[in-house]
Amino acid sequence: MKKFIAIAAAILCFAAVASAQPKALGIRATYGAELSYQHNAGPGFFEFDAGLFDKLIDVTAVYDFNIAPIGPLNFYAGPGVFVATWPGEDVMHAGLVGQVGLEYTFDFPLQLSLDWRPWFNFVNGFVGHYTGAALGIRYAF
Image (cartoon, rainbow, N blue to C red; front, side, top):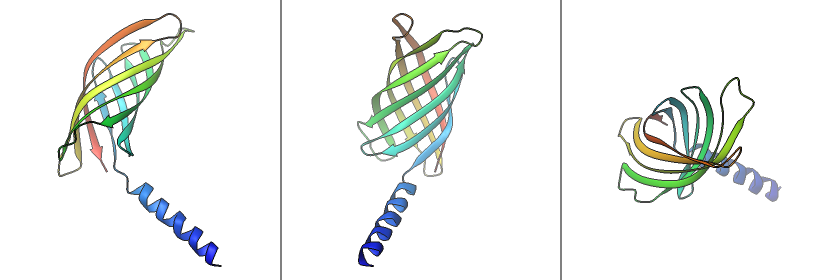
């Protein structure tokens, strides 16, 4: 019975900690737009984006390290991966991305970010690409 209570307490504590992790949902806009989701994890956060650039459809996952958090202001950078395709083509692209950015989370549930994310395609030929700076606007919860 003691083991059962200890396991149940551990599961409840784990669920409470997992649900208390800060998250953010919104858009990331550059030459196109992406639906963006962030989830804090350890010394940084995961960012998952799915978007449309001109005729390119992409999905990106990045783990960003909090390099210099100062109150509500945070400088971050990290590596990630992407998969992309152009509708109507049978060609898939995949590779690595890097991301460097700055974000500010207000006292109310709004987060603004400005970042830069170059990507390097390793499938169907090596191509480096610079997508420019992006503005992120997210609801933080």
